[in-house]
Image (tube, rainbow, N blue to C red; front, side, top):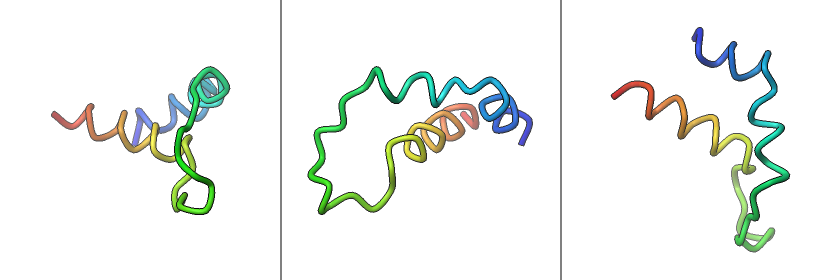
Length: 47
């Protein structure tokens, strides 16, 4: 929970997203790129 608050308050995810390219077709996208990045960071922190 603390890590999520840090990510939200710092705005790091929003800074990262414009620097990345999303090769997925928009018709197939269920979860947006910021959500996927947040989930990936939080899952990595659990290890």
